Length: 333
Image (cartoon, helix red, strand yellow):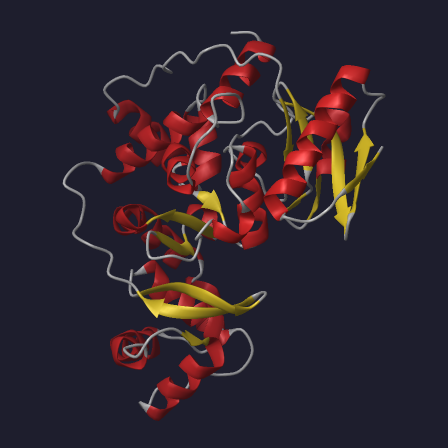
């Protein structure tokens, strides 16, 4: 498959090409998981893959979804029915990766075990913010040190399926709620994760799955080998497709080769360091510009001059973004 053909197929797999999804659940099901360290960015990922939805009515914090630490140890939004089996695959690796840091913070196995045992009672009355969780743990005889000890403890508990993030009480201020992870999977959960990955990212290989999941090469290869048929399902031709995708978009984070969708000479403009991924303009799956929003101003910064047709399509996308946000936007190039 040519590079342009692969990008067109990936665009279709990711619902960035017509027909797009009609609900948040449809987007999450196709992608398997949405990056969710910033819910405003998660909302933009949904908009780019759906039609007719509005930001104020997405329900990203509803019981239908779970927001917890999964792929690569970062926050993702998944269907509530998928959280348990995904944690069975990714939780042990996340716990092992952070073990040394927990020890440095005074979170030895005994402290972690006592905290995990106490958390169901601590959170029994509903979601609490971090300070409230720490205070109630202290009242239960589990004293957590200052600084980063509390977030590392809570991430540890999340990796065990004890809790997940609850609704934000203010922008960026999280709460924590109890999680019922459900029964363990009846089949090979790692292979199921690979199958779900392929459904929303094909064409892709085991190295792409390893980069997306954080599982590493050996389990990723084994997962692909366990699939009945890892051959990508053909997708219909995408046709001309222009999308404005936001921070940390799954299309830009879902593959091992970061230059497949972003020309090598412009990668630094999209991936600006510290894991940050800039809002990007995609044309037929290829990054051609970045974009920024400052209040009502939406500015597009092309890598190279854009054709009139592309500029017109970007303007159409900007109009849809304004509709989605229910806010006026003034586009400039």
